[in-house]
Image 1: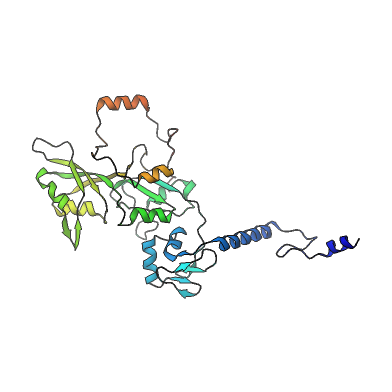
Image 2 (image 1 turned 60 degrees about the horizontal axis):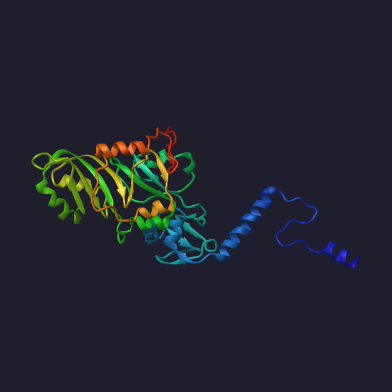
Length: 329
């Protein structure tokens, strides 16, 4: 009897509702969330503030450094410094006065076939037509980085990712990430001027150049209006500025390859979720011989069709899943 009496008078566990009272579902959820956050904070390791902001989807590491210099980032009520270490879930971080929650979204990396007419930005006050307006609804609630942009008039392969570390690896100048483009000009480009593309020019204090260049389907004199070029860096509108400064107008510019990963099989305005193996292909060196993705040997093209029948728009092969864009309003 005494044991039973002691059991009945034992106080409830800390944080639990009193006995005899029903625990509202919302209260149970809030309690579980708080306990989960507390456990996460206890196990979290300190990381640099730039990485924290990138993982939380606020901005890239480089943009985070700019925000820190402008005193827009605060940690526990004090102005943050570049390289400062914070503990996710334990320290209170704000950007421009708004709190930043620890990163919770899953890591997703997409390859998009960008059309012309859209800008690579999460928000632009002067243009609301961005690549994110055509993302499938399945990804609408996730915060993506654009790891290597294309200008509004260009098209082709763009990598979108929720992984701040991956975006940093793809965009940092210290990493050699090969990018290949098809360039269509309004005038014939003479073969004699090809060395100028490789040597480069100085434009507003910066050197603009390409690492490799090949003229496609040249005429008898060796001139062509189409080129296949390769770059390892890629400043803003660098290819267009390079050709324009040399006296040639770019009619069309398409990026068809990053590393060893190509645009092949991804329809226009569609995205493909990349597997870990495909993500690593972005950092691999492509084959030495630059390929022309538009021209193929008729015999090999015939054999390719027999092995891989054409897939209608909106469908995907068993080995590749592509997503069509959401409807634009």
